[in-house]
Image (cartoon, rainbow, N blue to C red):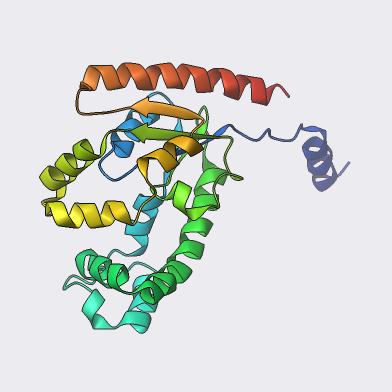
Amino acid sequence: MSNQTASSTSSASQPPRSTPLRIGLTGGIGSGKTRVADQLAVLGASIIDTDLIAHALTQPGGPAIGPIYALFGEKVIADDGSLNRDVMRDLVFKNPAARARLEGLLHPMIGSEVQLQAARAHGLYQVFVVPLLVESGRWSSRVDRICVVDCDEETQITRVVQRNHHSREDVLRIMQAQATRQQRLDAADDVIINDGNTSLEQLRERVEQMHQKWLALAKAKSSL
């Protein structure tokens, strides 16, 4: 038997790889999605973060910079050659057509990279961190469960003002462009509370509890 035939026979005899449990992780700005994702990564989940992908695409020399420059001009490019996020944020808030053009450019590029990272992932289950998961309307069919990191709106505002040094008005404007807290909760299969009264230890315990739940679901799915 030739090596090629042997290889083909061996490959054909292997069972297909089961589809991993896929979790969509979302939450409003300042809710603590990144902290939760970091803790899940430590516990063994594969994290695929669309925000990190978008940042990589728009860093100096990133593949999206040239097309963005062609669409919007040099005003949206920072001195270091990266996307000037403050200028672009202001532009798309004021101009829905500009937002549509930017999303039409970035979303397919982000989607391709998400697929590549998911195909390479070997964690206990996959977590897709998508800030605008509920707003997009596309993710409910791509994941098995949606988990919302939830906190009250005042906590969101306080955290973002302290972290990003935005004005309260700017944070409110960003929040108004996102789904409401209730809309996210209505879409959720799971919720991790991370309000202003939540300590780091309490958050770790809540993440650990959710992790154990998802491990059981992942095991059940892999046995089907």
